[in-house]
Length: 190
Image 1 (cartoon, rainbow, N blue to C red):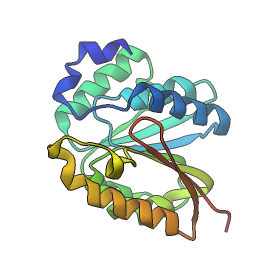
Image 2 (cartoon, rainbow, N blue to C red; image 1 turned 180 degrees about the vertical axis):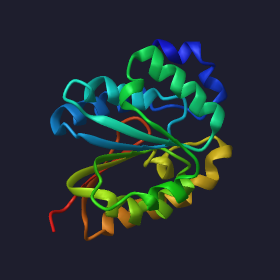
Image 3 (cartoon, rainbow, N blue to C red; image 1 turned 60 degrees about the vertical axis):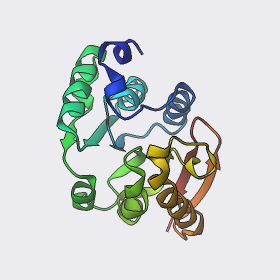
């Protein structure tokens, strides 16, 4: 997307790669989720990617970002892409925002935030996901990838998260080798 080159994106946490973005769009085209939650906005690349598909069928995205500067860049990118009307940004700590959502609020959750938060947020993500809803996380293959040393502290939380998802009685899941790894899970019908 053109806005990546216009926003100084290298100053921010890396965005999802093109394969992951195309996979997100494909899942949205198949599932057609109306209410989407994104945890970890950065400059808005994945939110715009999803919104361009979601607006075709009346979907909307709530996105959470901790960093005010990144959120400002994301908001500019939403406006440039013409999707700002369907993407409200919640500015703040996901550990405080996510527990505040009521149960069964979202049809799809996409998580791409600090990997240390993945296991911390899992229980609430399952709680707020509708039965039959899709839960996706980026960077789920960090444990098996050769990473820059600055990301080594994120390997153990990803390992823990992957174990928790695989063992969850509430989710059917698989880990896909797309991009840096995408964990895809569906919440079971109760």
